[in-house]
Image 1 (cartoon, rainbow, N blue to C red):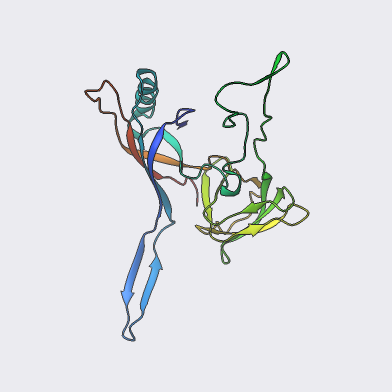
Image 2: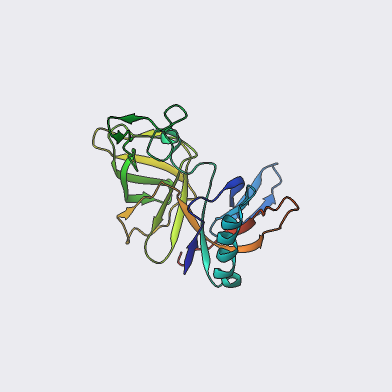
Length: 231
């Protein structure tokens, strides 16, 4: 059973990396032979801002719910929680008008939220050899930049990909996205939803701490490494 971070995670520092297990062998002509020994796995280190008593309780509860690693945690790169082209799109959760709430007549002015302004992408095909993913369901001319994340979940395992080149969807909302790590060889489970809002990997938490400071505040930190339930 996988848990999730608190709805407002209060993350101030993050280190999100793709770890590769490789063997390197120098050859006589000055080159190197590099062999990948296992599927690459994402790792994550996060640190929170000072937490209130209520926020600290959420992290304390999360820590015990993980049961020492018997349960897993969905972790994402908090420095890039959505496609960067839409990172600052105004919505009802981050739009500010002046410093006070404005009213028109008797109604509070609200800014309608577009949860996924890039569309509703689905993976319809992928290529392990080319390390690409074919997407449909994007908004026409939607832009995805290198560094953006997307995740797919086939019910058994969750895979997290990072774009390695910019791409713009065509007029039909289709695009071929270059990614790492390379997708699996099998296409039997396609099509799959391609999640780009807080795209997360399922991880085992290898360490977690929540020290209390003399200022009467807590900070939480944890590290995790991805698991793949099926290759």
